[in-house]
Picture 1 (cartoon, rainbow, N blue to C red):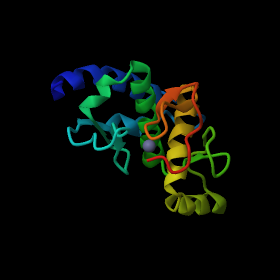
Picture 2: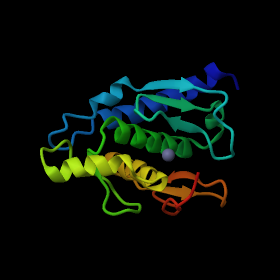
Picture 3: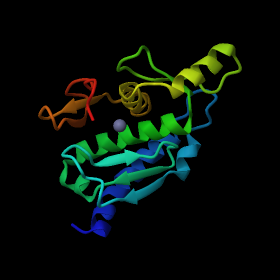
Picture 4: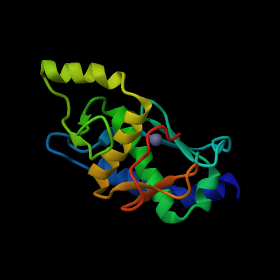
Length: 173
Ligand SMILES: [Zn+2]
């Protein structure tokens, strides 16, 4: 499938997930409007491992997608989009979310706060592990969409799914 066709299939789903995030308005947030500026980019080089279909830049302002994403079931595609926007909402709103612990769970919006505790959290936010960053993306997706992000499929190629599967295993890349 050529890039334009793949983009035409993915883009409407991407728009819908982005709108869900932008309109998410926990108290005091006014909606996650920074995500209006996130750019959608198709990248033919992205699919370099069986489970690598998407990526989010570390400022949350760009997402890259492999054209092979369209070969997945729509439900899987949308769960992947929800996860990637979880990264975008995490990176674009640094330390504005908290997780219940150091593992998977639902994230909670705390916003920017004028307290010593929050400034310490903002420092700690920068030194999270890769697993904690991945669990946060799922935790934010759960908070925003109201659906649980699970991992389905074979070991070695587990992909995001909604409301089934298992919590993201540590070390999954
Ligand atoms: Zn991720």
